[in-house]
Amino acid sequence: MRKEAYHIIFESDTRGGRLFDIVLLWLILLSVAVVIIESIPSYQKRYFDLFYFIEWTFTILFSIEYILRVWSSPKPWKYIFSFWGLVDILSILPTYLDLISPGYHYLLTVRIFRLLRVFRILKLVRFNREARVLLEAMRGSTHKIGVFLLTVLSTVTLLGTLMYVVEGSESGFTSIPQSIYWAIVTVTTVGFGDIVPQTTLGKLLSSIAMIIGYSIIAVPTGIITVELS
Picture 1 (cartoon, rainbow, N blue to C red):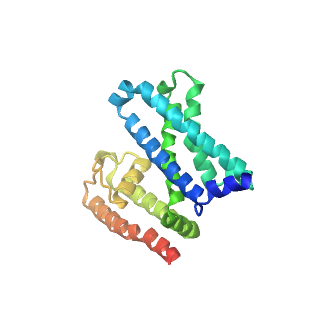
Picture 2: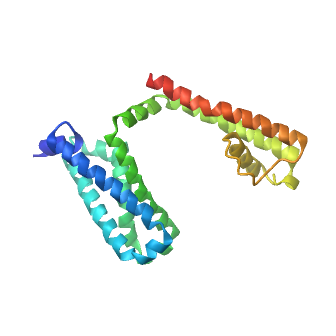
Picture 3: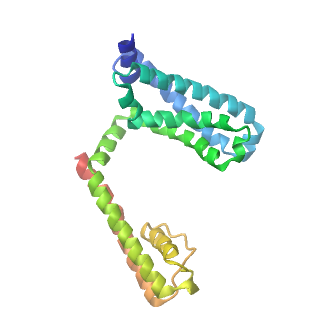
């Protein structure tokens, strides 16, 4: 019986497995939609009881799924501490944390945990072969991406420090962390515009940061593309 359950739950090459995946797919999509709609203040107050009931329904169903996965897995502990096992537990844990206090919606920490229910959307990757290939490519390029991120961190730290020295607090660069924030915003080409250099040298540094930013965007894409090929 456990072996049959394993084939249905973990594999999709059987009729039962395909049906299980389709039902689970719709449950995930609907549960994420509920989390998103529930975040709208007017709906949250008006339909609080309905949202509460629906969320607990989804949580119970996903809890049953999690228990079945642990029970049917040949190596339960390996599944529990695997990426998908952690995603599965994160998708149901926040609702149970609501039981800690009757005033859970006033507690910032618990509210953050409740928003973790959106982790259910990661469960969708299970059903997408291309997404699994991408994850494998990212896993294979972890070291290269790590070196790249370290280079970016060093670059924004250097640019931020230079801008702090060149511009100073008069232009809004009140500290090195604040200046590093500006460097990150500029290098990533987001450009909020809340801090703007005023001096000629500052504008030159800003231009260099933008050019570096355009170069940086292509690097991780190239690394992952090589792994995919």
